[in-house]
Image (tube, rainbow, N blue to C red; front, side):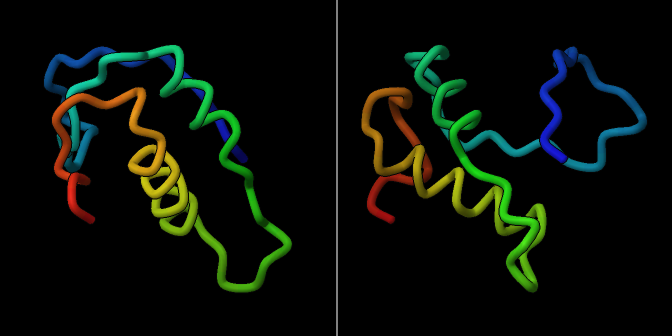
Length: 74
């Protein structure tokens, strides 16, 4: 299930890790790409890690929503 929730960036005990991957220059475009990344629950072996990998590949290929990024050159 895809769930989109606003969260605070303040430190909390429940978050295990936070990874910064890019400077966002177009938040609307980022949101559009993440919302368009499909859930593939019918595919055997597909999981949330697969979704994140696909979303990051789509974001890295877009060249509009990120400024400087750790995805550069990948």
